[in-house]
Image: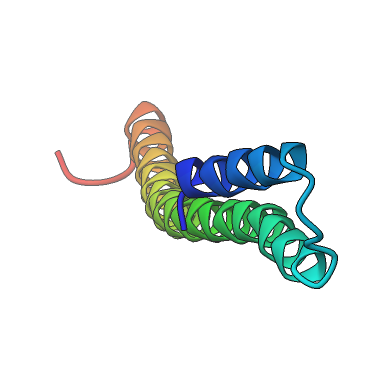
Length: 98
């Protein structure tokens, strides 16, 4: 049911009340239907929040993968740097191939 339908029911109920009909027997049903509006709105909000959480979890996995890749790259660069420093030091000391 849409918000318009709830508004229509509310308006119809108010119009019937103006005519003074004894609708006490119908009042609990109408109130129950009108009370469902809040439930439906909250249900929609929960659905949107779940979708948002799912999107964030996907983004988190993507970011973690990127972090792992960056850490691997960093470790490789550190090794390359250590090897380069060692080769540079050896050449300064006169060790190694000529």
